[in-house]
Length: 430
Image 1 (cartoon, rainbow, N blue to C red):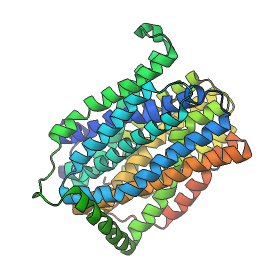
Image 2 (image 1 turned 90 degrees about the horizontal axis):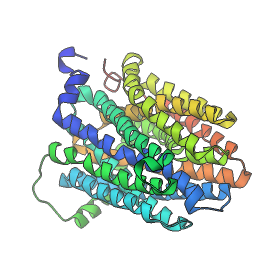
Image 3 (image 1 turned 90 degrees about the vertical axis):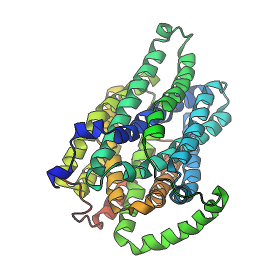
Image 4 (image 1 turned 135 degrees about the vertical axis):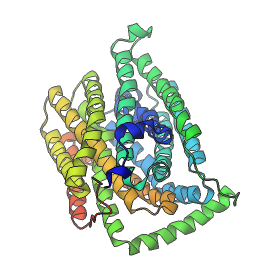
């Protein structure tokens, strides 16, 4: 890459529009850490599902994650098509964020034993989180030059790790030392943590709302008519993607390997609880993941610059395969800490690199539509993984076999990636 056309990391951070876009990752990653990966699985098993068999609660949690993913998978392509037609990515992002924020705060009000209401609120909050992410991903082509999209993507993920980790650290301290915050105990601390995520998400979304510019288009048809046109556009996009063999092959591989990644994110704490580890040990391990993940996301981007995008993805998939095998054999909380560190090293890298590679394949004028499909596949796959883990756990009575089943997803993803051609236009720029 021509050095004159590339801006340094410091220059990217000084760019107000890029920094404002990246801060949205800082904002909503609090939901991914404190709620999705951290306290919701713990509270679901120990508070909202108090007295239930551990394998049954794992199955219920898996179904909750699968349901939210199925709904998102259905609406993502249409959502992207509407956003492209209306130039309304930011408006829709705000709407989905509002839904996620309100439902996250409402989790603090769910009574002990009321797991059905907890599931309903969690599913709606997850839809708000994932729907806003789909639109956030599509905005990257508006804020980043083609030559810097990989760096900007990595910047977003790294800030997400840091921001999510900062609030998560505060929330963990609240649960370990509730008296320092004037709280009555761990239950109230977790409930207040849900509220803190809603406030954090709202506050750090403001820069994107005010400073990320989106080209205005003439006032067009209503959202209802655009939705109908969106469904028609989805069919057309299917036909178009079928003609783009390389993109189709990449999406096939992505469908499977990202399913394994997302399932580990959502089900890791539940798995640790099923093995009898204390919730405090698991939460501290997740916190470790966040702070390892912050520099690792940036360093992985640098590694990919040297070895290429395809090799970088293979390294990450191989690492996750090893993580899955190690998870089957682990015996102590110390093993879980090692697992958390390993996940932190590769989680942001595989997500960031996948997003930037697909952005390089995406026509700018169809960013919302194509990223709608990209996120649709991620959600469809995220429906399969948690269900697979829950079903194996329920039918075999073995939490260890349930996590080992994820290796199938990484193997299929790696095989699919073998057939993807990464020419110079799709490689991470040097």
